[in-house]
Amino acid sequence: MTALGFLYPGHSAEDDYPRIEQLLASDIRVDLVHTDAGQGALRLDGLREIGSPERLASGVEELRLAGAEAVVWASTSGSFVHGWEGAHEQVRALARTAGMPASSTSFAFVHAVRELDARRVAVAATYPDDVADLFAGFLRAAGVEVVSVRSAGGATATETAGWGAKEVLALAQEGDHAGADAVLLPDTGLHTAAHLTLLEKELAKPVLTANQVTVWEALRLVDRRVNAPRLGALFTREPIVQV
Image (cartoon, rainbow, N blue to C red; front, side):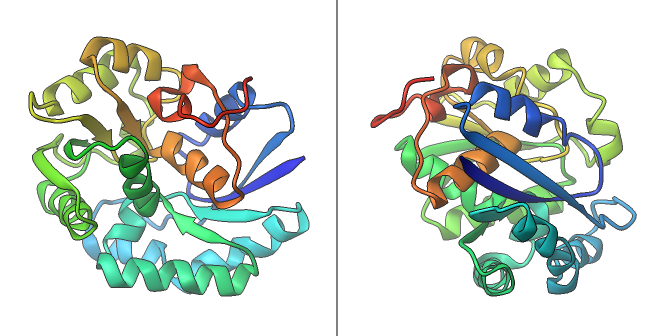
């Protein structure tokens, strides 16, 4: 059994994780612990606070007791808001506290883009403009060319958690760019696991979404690869273990 641990801020789209678990190999377990998300507003000060070492440390012991082999901080904005170096330090501190390999959703996007060899990407974000621009800056610091950034204006996690396939597809289509090799939807508060096949069919290119890449990153940390086509192009790469 491979046990993957996730620290997820608040309550919004966390049911993506058991859905993804069902689509993976039967010997993969997804364990999720909720951390304090504060007021849930997408303001820079609040985003920095939700990813503080104290808040992340509070959920680590439960994951350790569950037998997790790696932990991922399942928040994009709660990691890239610290900047490239700050996000690295956040992950290093989490790994020290947890005593296991650690990462965050921001780095999951970077590694997933490299996995797909997507040299140019488009960002379709639910964030306010300033937060979306910070995510684009984080990607550029990793050497990723960002050809466009689309902001949906900063809906709260509570609001985006209620979005269905129609709204998610509209966001992806509005954020797409003809020159992009892939489209990135960075909000872990957005339900996307059930829509990945639709998104990639309609956009005719890989689509990377926050909860999808977060689970993939945890698998990468424990050196597992799973072929699960319903989770998109990211989960159909060689070498594979067929599901």
